[in-house]
Image (cartoon, rainbow, N blue to C red; front, side, top):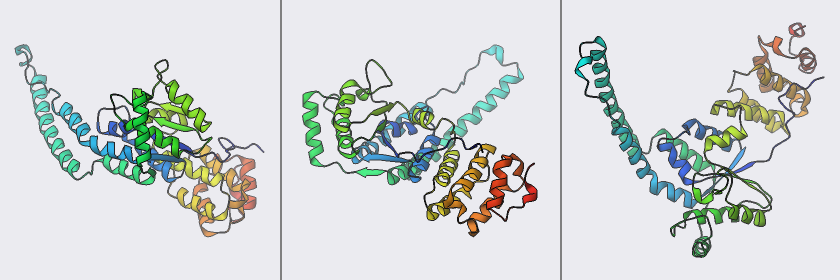
Length: 339
């Protein structure tokens, strides 16, 4: 029988990820990264798909620079010109009056928007605030000890990257990662900081840092300039956080190693109802081939879930797969077999 799942997934290794402070701060400014990228990150961390390293140096840098970043963004937004002068030749047209009316509405709306934003800034209740706080809470927090700072000073004095003009922050973060990431574990690094980037290839880590990492960790570092680039590479078909959450729940069911994890995966999957035909076939395939699911087919949650997802969609399941499924899950009506 043909396996209709997207692929026969092995249990993949956890992705070890570091995001530089500037990437978080960009969510308060004009940036190609949308807040949905942070939502996807939060989902992946909670699902233990990603282990995010958060040195306290990053948290301190974020808190120091948040106000400045917001202030600069609002200043640019506030000062964007709204036309208030029109040549005389336009004033005899109906469109002129319409434009004047719309522009006045824009001025009032912008003022109202800025006031709402000001209130949420003070309360740290901006959408970016809430999501970043959840990411920081879910990630692996790492204290900055005196030994790291001392080593960063020595590193800066020797002129070794990352870092410039006597700044220690990048060096502290790099040394923290060298001390924290397990040996033989690849690291995925998101930063726009040129101190990390190769002068020959803007998509690679600089040669000094790359060689240092390989020497000490016996693994690789993969560089991304934006969080969007990371998700585009690792999850190319996922556009929304809800889609990622659904896919990770399907993966958890497919690879479930015991009854407990099966029940947990079923619980997560019941939050979704918009399964594609491919996803539905993948779920049914898992329920047939994974004994950690089929051996508890009479448990109430498994029974309810299997009945709900198939109701009215029996025809999209591969006929051979559906026949095998209905044989195991005997409460499924065999008259619904789509052939």
